Length: 120
Image (cartoon, rainbow, N blue to C red):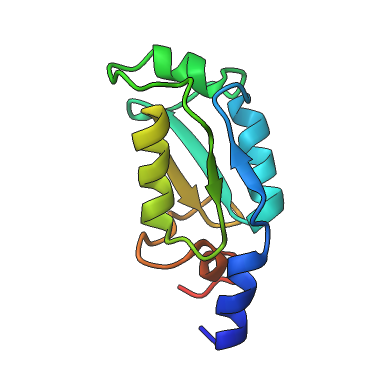
């Protein structure tokens, strides 16, 4: 990854926010629009219903997480695995980041910006 790409990833879509009141399908669409890769929500081992909000999905899981807490911000410079952990820690939900076609999981050790550029 070049220096210019690193700098760009720090600032590109820095305003992408996640809040518990948003529907999963809205968050997924906004994430794909912002980064060019897919964000998939899970309930257990199944893909979650996109009509649910993060809070509603959290209510269906066994984890006790404060969904009234502030949302999170995601940047292109964050590693895929770290972004997935943020969703678990803040909202108690499992997410996976997939390639733009939604066919392959993106490796956890690369940044979202690298994933968007297909650098894996």
